[in-house]
Length: 206
Image (tube, rainbow, N blue to C red):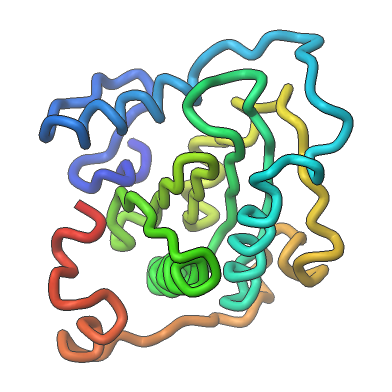
């Protein structure tokens, strides 16, 4: 039995059917999953460097925001020649579900501050997987367990990696380790949670 999907609820097997939840939200989620599952053609043409892509500054800011909250295995893959769903997938891991929540919060806050852009959020930090959809960049933040189960990066093996060596720390690029600091923001009570997620917390990741 696998971990829960970013939509929450029962564990989600790769082959399971996505149930309709509501209108446009369902359509967008279905598109994300179907897009990730598309067979990847070989020899796809990309412009010379992913760094030249107009979305690269946004992606770099996302990666740095994750690094600021001690995310690990931060990767950015350009997939614009493989799908119409998005231009970049950005993936990163947090050691605990609470850290996944902290990383997602910091990414949302920093991108709002720097670019005045709001994400379309999906998933629930309690599931160990959250998704932030900025249109031209879709961010996946998950625990190592969820990352290993779904192996999203392998689905886009024919995409083009954006080098983040000059953006994030060496630790941010490294795979998660049992020796990593248990970095998290402890949510001791509902009042403290509201300060991070806002009063409509239940609807943010719904």
